[in-house]
Image (cartoon, rainbow, N blue to C red; front, side):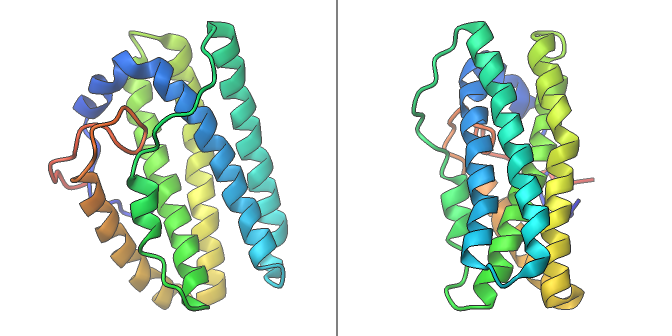
Length: 203
């Protein structure tokens, strides 16, 4: 896992427990977006042969997670609906440079950081839900390992394409920017939003 610059405290997850139905709706949407993001690399960079099979497999796994979320929504009688998105992803994507090949490196790193933060927050959510909603706690806990694998894949692809030194130098900048965003959260009940973080460093 990349060394996230801010740790998500248990209080963040506890504040979102009452919004777990909305979080589940959002989770289904996030899984679709993650699958689409992986496929976008395949369309934009067909010449990057090392990307093709790994990102195709990643997209399939994200869609399988979407289906898991759909099953939970249907079983609980929760309707799919459009939600106001958290500003997190849009603000993080704004860091991506416009010229190639820097654009490719930044896209891989932003994807890796989003997956890393998702894994961290799903773990914290699962712990907070354990005594409140065991089914949802198990759902989020079950996604943590795959999110961690996905971030590792994006970093592996970046290092394979650009080398460790360039990748890790830029990764440090992306992580610093990501930490700043979490201290300016909008307060929405979303996986990448919620109460702003206060600057507690990761252990």
